[in-house]
View 1 (cartoon, rainbow, N blue to C red):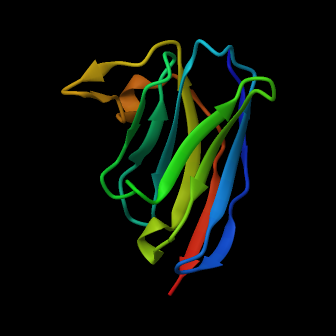
View 2 (cartoon, helix red, strand yellow):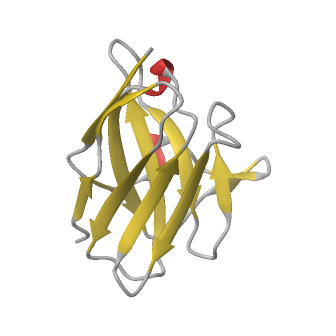
Length: 126
């Protein structure tokens, strides 16, 4: 069983930056991803780092967010720059033993991930 613990959320003004961390009891063979859910919105996949090193981003965050991991620290990161109010929400770390690949991207569907953290809140004010 994989256990995930997110941190790094907070309040920031538009244009600012935050870095989220997810400490995981995972092996580097796992597929890891970040999701978010804003108020009144459905859960949305943000970024995925596959178990073979492939990366996919949601169109809404391309060029602004960067996903990475440090296997020695068993930590997944999400560097978020140029934040916008619409980036506000609860951010979740998720993991799965493999990453589905479809239509040229690694999966950003929540249905494809088995393990989830409790989330960390990000609030971006205008």
